[in-house]
Amino acid sequence: MGALVSMAAELVQDDLTLTRRVGQTVSFSCEGTDQCGAYGVYWYQKKETETFKLILDIDQSNGDIDKSYNHTQEDDFTAVNKGNGCELKIKKVKLDHSASYYCSCYKSGSHSEK
Image 1: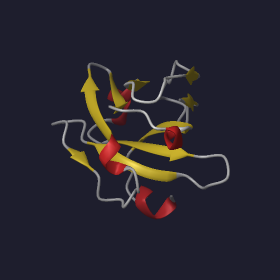
Image 2: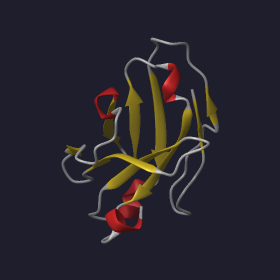
Image 3: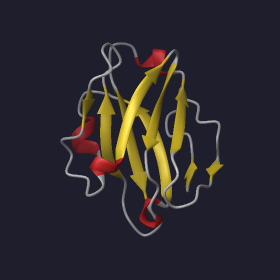
């Protein structure tokens, strides 16, 4: 349902396009997050006619998820740490989830840059 493009050079998003039917589950992978160090990983949604929207961040150390970014679909998303990577998951795909999804290492000041 969304195309994946690598946003940061050190992070790898292998699946360029994922397609799901409405109501199905989808997971977007992001590898190489150990290079983010103690920082967290941000997940962004980018629709064609809109700017990047921060969905959530996931803490590298304990897997805690922060959704305090006022994304209108925040309840549809969750994230998990997996080895040297993490995944963004949509439990039930909706038509308006069609977008590109990007992962990025958390850096100090990232909130104001996006």
